[in-house]
Every structure is written in structure tokens, then in C-alpha cells.
Length: 152
Image (cartoon, rainbow, N blue to C red; front, side, top):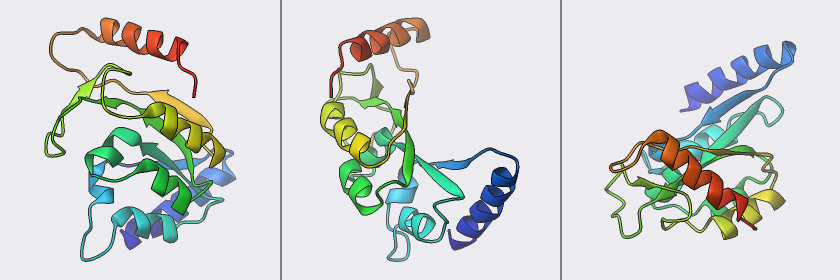
């Protein structure tokens, strides 16, 4: 992951020279200890904040058994984007494919997103995985309805 961080910095420099930003989107493996270290920590500590942004996929952080707010607190201003995706209530962490419509799952978005907004989050992106008994358009409608009524 140190090599990845070095590569991210190089790519970030190239992006900066061309007027765009480089960002990294996590999955759960970055929040699971590897040789006594969290890969996400290695990436965060070895990339330059003016070159590399991070997009937190809240679903995957929760699936890894981690607290998104603790990560916002640990690295304020580094997570500029997030994926908002809900997790089925009662699903064990070992169940990786447990996506449900926003607001019907177990993730406390009101608390998490309120905190994120004070720690540098700029962009909130709904990501909906496919799951049984719904169509993509029905899931998008349900997510949109949840967001219309959302107040953090």
C-alpha cells in the first residue's frame, strides 16, 4: 500500500498539472488490518493532501466493522467525496452483498453525514447495488424519495 501511495502521489501530480483531481475509492479491505496496519492508514499517511483526495464508501467502511465518523475525525479534510449506500438491518458483517434502499437499512446516515459535512466532505454520491426483488429504476426512485425527505 506504500507503493500504491507513491503511485497515487505521482498520478495526483499529473492530474494537478492538467487541472483535475485524483481520488481513491475504498472497499472493505482497506479497513481490515494487514500485517498489523490498516491499509487505509498507510494510504492516508503517505499521500499528499493537495494531490490525492479520498472517496469514502460508507457501506464498505461499515462492512469492515469500522466507524466512518472515527475516520473523519482521524483524517479531517481528506475525505472529499462519499458513497451513500445502505446496508441490510441484521446482516452479519461477513455478508458483503447486503445493499438495500436508502433509509431502510442499518446505517445512520443522519449522524454520519452531519459529521462528514463538518470534516471537509464536499460531494455525496448515491450508489445502489443490485439486489433481489427490485429493478434499478425502482431502487433509484426509493433512494431519491429518501433524499428528498432527508435532513441531517
